[in-house]
Image 1: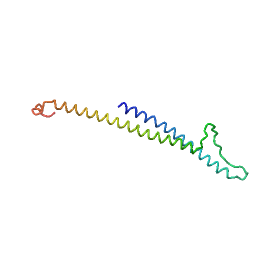
Image 2: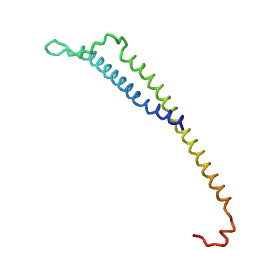
Image 3: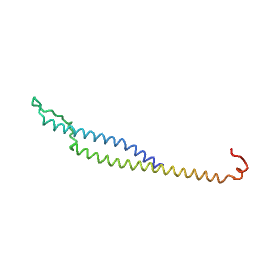
Image 4: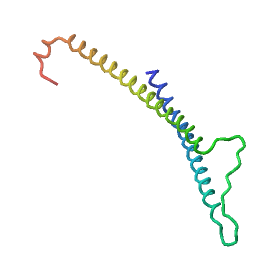
Length: 128
């Protein structure tokens, strides 16, 4: 039961991490869309000879393209997905095993108590 509880806590902790990675992928997708819009808009010249374009926020610490960022975060997302499935299975399996053992103990205790009863007592008296 302790292993099942720890695995369930880990499974619950992985979900917010997956949401954080999902946010990173969506942000990279919007940056990719901005880049594509920027490339498309820079080729279109308006009537006053100025081009319409969107500027991406300058991020000096991030030198990866949005496509590389998406692939980077998707690898972690897949890894967390497999870990989540594994820990969910571990929690489920260990709780099922613990429940089966408890049921078996209860059944054996009931069976032992039934066998300890005097059978003749039930033959002489009415039910209830």
